[in-house]
Image (cartoon, rainbow, N blue to C red; front, side, top):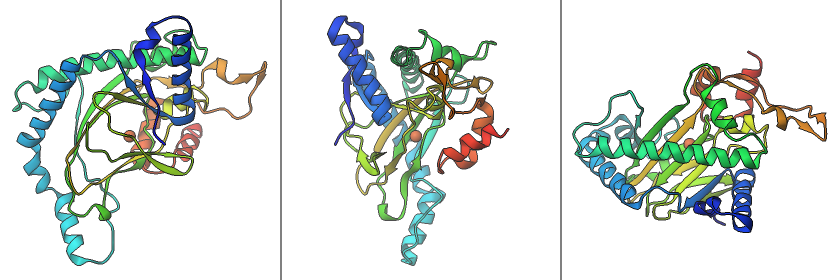
Length: 310
Ligand SMILES: [Fe+2]
């Protein structure tokens, strides 16, 4: 079983071909929470540059630091003890987050220019994907974008996580990234061409997100679940540590502004003219994030209950 791979260029078409593609995306959102886009419109040349600068950045600015990090040292000490105990509260991951206004790596030539261009492209792609979701959910065009950007001048939060999962000497004792659902809106992942490790939980089984060259993996976070009143559920995922290969993974997330009020779209809380009893809560995204920060690796339902109680 493999997650759906969809030709995104076909949504620009007309007629039956477009309808079929829209239906594939609806199915990806409803049944999987994860799907891969090909022909997504991001130039190949740019993607090749992104891979190059991110790998160079890791080699030049991070590898040595990671090899001497607390996680690396703790894992080695634990393996020497040979007690069968696992490293539970950390991830075998090297990560930085790029925002419009934070400090970026500065030693790797071309990093800043390339990643700035990449982020601008990915943000546009996110908005396009959200428009497809609007249409599939029978919401007005631009509804999700507007909800995330909030009416009072607060912009959506667009971040890019540049991660590496270096070869791990004891992959049985630690996770690359512990299982979780994503807090935010729409996540766009540019994963390694070769080194896998990302898995999603579907019908009780962990399934690999198969590496494919230059595709973009889309997944939906908890806020899309709320906004769609449960039609599009956020999906559990994790990254396994691997003994060989250094997995590169670049995840961009289009999240609501912390000041945005998130609630189920009014059109989705009724069925046949009658209100559905069970609806998702309404809350400030910033309040949700305060809870998520403490509960990221736990089930999402208690988070929804906690914001409902506020
Ligand atoms: Fe995630």
